[in-house]
Image 1 (tube, helix red, strand yellow):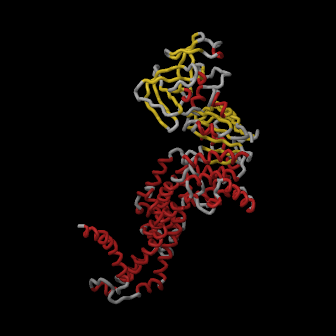
Image 2 (spheres, rainbow over the protein chains, first blue to last red; image 1 turned 135 degrees about the vertical axis):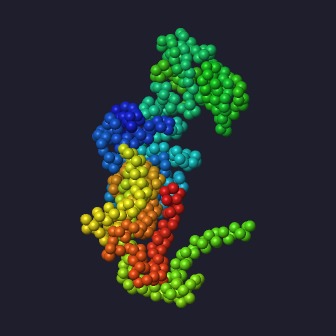
Image 3 (cartoon, helix red, strand yellow; image 1 turned 180 degrees about the vertical axis):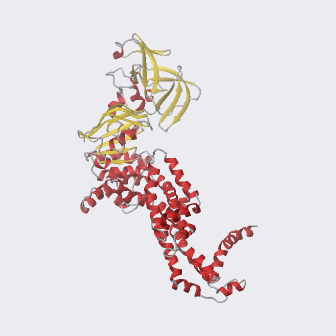
Length: 362
Length: 266
């Protein structure tokens, strides 16, 4: 179903929690809300669910205004970050509860509950109580309750955040398949950029109560229109610096390089550059990279990857993320090579100088 | 030293149980034996005292009256406290903290303060000497207590549970009865226990507001003692019996009380 927010705002105790937001969700696949904790993802979800009423603006479901409609009447499902189930009911009754409230007949309920339990791999657990299950199974129960209802809108508020690493990977893989043929619009809130990329669909980046941008996840990652989007959608955090354009040359402190073709017609002056950490390498991997010397502050090794935080000559802290193990000396100066294809150029107001130049890799 | 510490809990329990033992053992003695000197156990074991209580309606009706108003009070207190505690745990409203504190201060006022106004009020509306009068009077300190205990338990239930239920289609009353109340049964058990106990042991209001028809057992005990001399054996038997309801209730809520302690609300 087409879900739309029109100029929706939310003000709590004189404080703007959500600034005027227009958002038209895609009816198929996942609509990921990506943003840090406290960015407003949960508030957006509650506004869609009707658990919070917007201060102004409208919420539309399939073109109909549901702004004043209570959550009970919206035909939606909701899964929280914490494993929320009804502790007084068995797993079976938990999954059946939305159908029981809607007064389906016994046979239909049984068929649907068993099907949902099958999909969520809860078959043998049906007669147990939620407290007797592991965290992963508890969340599966909550998810089963969300799919059994065949609702128009499924809201998943960081459903995997409290799960162990392995369980999280398993479920993340299953989720798109589970929701693929159900015809529901799925909203999935997460604070992890990698999670957004792994789920097929669209992403809205949220920061400080604003949806900075909404689009196909891959497009949004590759070609963010705003610096804020790139900043939200980057893990480790994106490197940024103030640069100056003089004719056909670009300058970052003392380093200069040739401006790409699309920038040549832009006026001279200050610009902002954003570079994702994996375009900054301690090795010379591409032809004619931009070279930069930085003092290494912290290093992290994760088996196949080396991450180094270093200070640039202008005093910014940048991050380099490269394949393989690289021996960094903490406190020493190292030379870093930046792949020019990785530069994202923004005007001083944060909008990107649009470019046809695509990044080579994600 | 190690040997000595082993006896410490034993001594403790001994001292703890001594008055109870004395009461129970007295209840099996004749009044003459009690008055004639110190005996560690009944020399002439008798069930006469208990027989009197269970056959004489002025005695056993005391228990019936007490149980009636205590149960009534427990039901009213918990039923009124449930929605109040829900409001305190879920909503922020103007002066909520002050209201909560004010509610608790009702527990601090001695019952004697209220005895006279209650007597006058209940007499004028024709409630004097009824079970409901005592039950209502006791809600004065039991509702605040129940609200306080229940609020602690309800705060432990995440608001996400409420939200999930609404999204699943439950209306508020349906959610409250079918999901929320069963979720906090432990809290309700603890609250009911304390309401029961405080109402059971409260004597002043119960005595002031009753005469014949709703006279509590404690009042019966004091009056019997003054009429036909000291019937100590009988009194001891009556006292032993008053311990039983409390013991039974404690048995049922013993596991919940630990939970209440963990929440710091008991």
